Amino acid sequence: MSRVPPVVYDELDAEQQRVYKEITGPRDGGFGGPYQVWIHAPDIANIFNQVANVLRVNGKLDKRLQELMILVLAKDWKCDYQWVVHIEAARKAGLSDEVVDAILHGQVPTLTEPDEQAVYDVVRELLDTKRLSQETYDRALSELGLPKLIELVTNSGRYTQAAMVANAFEVSTPGDAHPLTDLN
Image (cartoon, rainbow, N blue to C red; front, side, top):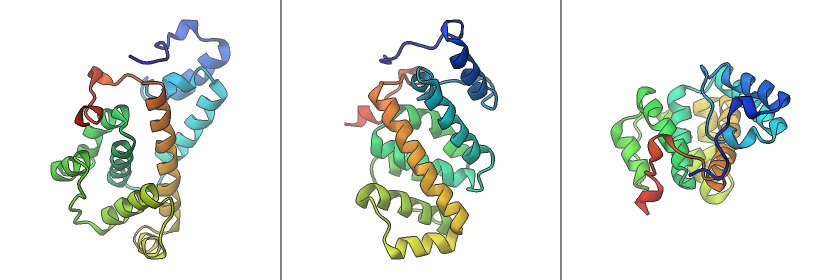
């Protein structure tokens, strides 16, 4: 059960309603996750939505790589909301069941594509050491190019923030599923 009550559009003030409409527009009416929390601070919701739109709409990083990044972060943060919402998108984007299952169970996945390996290594190293070694940086730069590497690191920070909010406010998952917290 979420610590924040469900959002009822008619109970939002004018600014919250304006931001709600901006958030739901490009999401085909979808409104959930950390936005359920952020809408209570509409300036924050608005800014995070703008950043999300830049990365989602104008981003150059392949969807498969984005979903790999999200699953690695969701697992690390034990963020059931992110995992549940992104698991099917990850499969549709081309991540194999073996890769998804390895991440779910805290194992190093066998990645056959160099760009996937670069993304995994960057995200994992940032999570584990809070830095990027020169070797990992150089390999990722060579594989992705500077704009996509910037996008990857920025989006990793965005999903980390979203996971923190989802976890802190116990944002409900679709179907009340808890695949990550139930593992422990």
